[in-house]
Image (cartoon, rainbow, N blue to C red; front, top):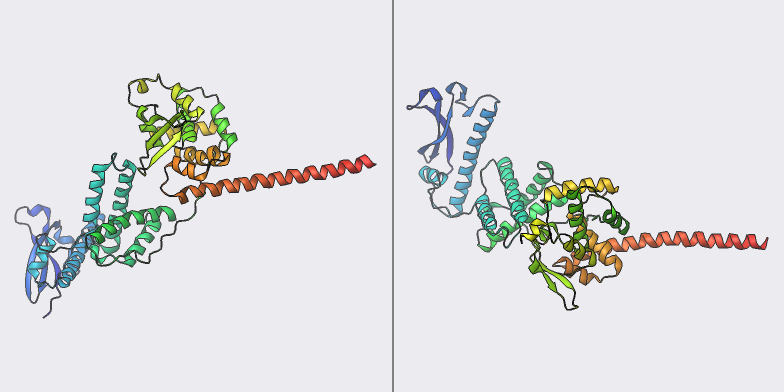
Length: 419
């Protein structure tokens, strides 16, 4: 028995409103039995090609309509495959019921699962997860949606059909169509991997498409301010209060290692007395939810004292008055130009400066630095240690050159003395 559906599109004049074109209908025929449904679109009868079952022309309207009809055809192919997998009887009526969402198909769709996941993250945003993380998953959702639309001419894709090739094509799509660099593309692939794990855990998929899929990030050199640059920044005479404030918040991050979101939410309750009798910051990091315990260095403590009478601080909303991230980064660009610093000043750079120039370079053990930064894995912190090792190597090479020059000068002086 032939269960392969024959799909055609045809037009029918609208009885209710003749001035707005003809209605487009979809007809599915299985074993000589047919079933019809309106696709909810209209077309000018003069622009409809009966033979190709498409709208004629290259206009945006024609492309959009023809793409939509292709989507419907592809959906029917997926539905047919799904029904065959479930050993269900295929009829024209069954196929159209599934297409309308009235059938009994149990297969989970990718964007459906992804959207449900993201909506849950939105409800946890600002509580268990950061707003930026929630936003990133929605960006990834948009990328996956566009990828499915353009590569499979479909509005969604069955999770059980996702394979190794789908993942490879998605990575390629991110790097080409979306123009993501290598590491950014892989971060989105990893975001999508979480959706796959959800599907596997719920047995919505039979196999893991990420099996044997290699995700190798490129090594990135993280910039930081050296000691001289930090001092230039601190000592620079800034005439505008807004620049002074942003400079102080940046320096505070340099001496605490706190990210922008953590500085912004810092409160009196986060300042505690340490076992050494000094003041400590104890805060759960917004990004990783790990506890950071940081002894307050004098520079950071002075900045807190400097703003204790600020209206925002006195109102009890915070311990430091912080501009929005967008404004802070814009003002930091001004400050960098005024200080003659070519490196991009931002809170990430400040955090890297704490890890390298302020702590590791001054002999603080890497395990302690890792705890203060709130890293879950020591390997993350070890990247900074490599930077410090390179800096030490550069400094020692400079020292070798100076010592060699001095030795040469001493030999010359001795020779001259003998003469």
